[in-house]
Image (cartoon, rainbow, N blue to C red):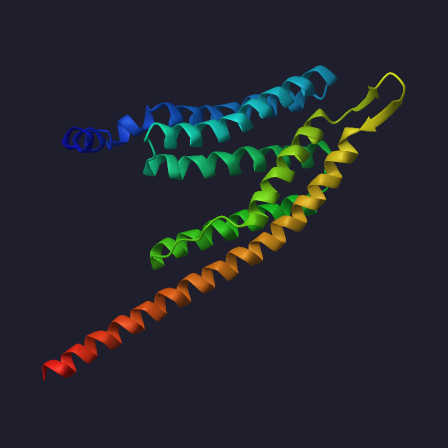
Length: 224
C-alpha cells in the first residue's frame, strides 16, 4: 500500500505525465491533424482515402488512450486537459478546411464551433463552482454521429457498392452532410442538457450549503 502511494506520488510530475503512454497517444492525435489536413488539401481520391485512414487512426486513439489511462492507473490533470482539446482541434480543423474546400456549408460548422466553445466555458465555470457535470447521452450521440459524418465527408467521392446481386452508387459527401446536420441537432439538444445539468448541480450545491449553514446555526443555538 505504501509503495503504491509513493509510486503514484512520484508519477505526478508534469514531465512524467507528458511521457506516459495514454498522453503520448493523445499528443499523437494532435500531430495527426496537419497530416489529415494536408491530405485533404490534395483533393484526390487516393489522398482522401489516406486522409480517412489517418483520421480514423486518430479517432481510435481517442478510445484507446482513455482505456489505457484507467487500466494502467495513469489518469492525470494533463490528460484531462489534452484529451478533449485534441478531440475538438481535429474535428474543428477538419470542418473548417471542408468549408474552404466547398464540401460543407459554413452554418453547421459555426453552430458546432459555438457549441463546443460554450460547453468548454460552462465546464470551466462548473469547476470554479466546485461542481461536476457528467457527460450527457445527447453529447455521446453527437460525438458518434459526428465521427461517422466526418469519415464520409473526408472520403467525399461517389463509390459504387457491389453486393453481387445489387449495385448502388453512393455519394459519400451527401451521406456525410446528412449525418453532419443530424449531429448539429444533437449538438444543440445536448448543449441544452449540459446547461440543465449545470443548473441542477449548482442548485444542489447551494442547497447543501444552506443545509450545512442551518445545522451549524442550530448547533450554536443549542450550545448557547
